[in-house]
Image (cartoon, rainbow, N blue to C red):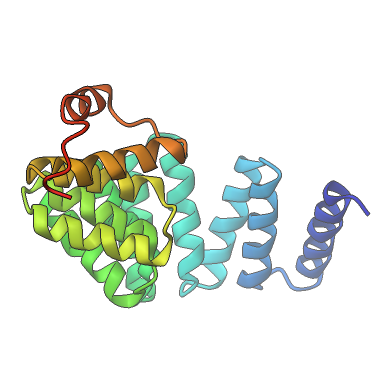
Length: 212
């Protein structure tokens, strides 16, 4: 059975389940996730709305609805759905992480940091939240805190390129150019597009190892 036919069979199975029990929020959610995998976003959104209507405590469904809003560029909608998600389940780290990400996009740095710190508190292996938190700390000028958050991200996933990029910027801020070069090169080798002005600045310091 091919991957496509397997997905289609799973979708058909969920539809059969719902035909006999249309009030099952989990089945609506499972169907929605499968439809998202097929790129059927409008149908998936309808199923997610059914899921939270049937099961108001299904935090994952709120987060998925937020993701669909983000896909449309609707930051306010994404924020609202994720807030409903963490209201339904206060310890839901993904919801807090998404709230932090959106708030950072909106320029609300202090509020973003609060949400991202909650996300990493509830899930100490949430690499994306640690990385976004490192970015937020940099934006607030807390370079040491940013370095610590990036190191935690890399302890979880050593090849996470955004964390290496953040460390390159943070070490530049501290004047530790050998370390900055090391992490910038690592980010580039992992396929990350480091800002040209950073690479240009670091190129002027290549060869100096006194701060290594």
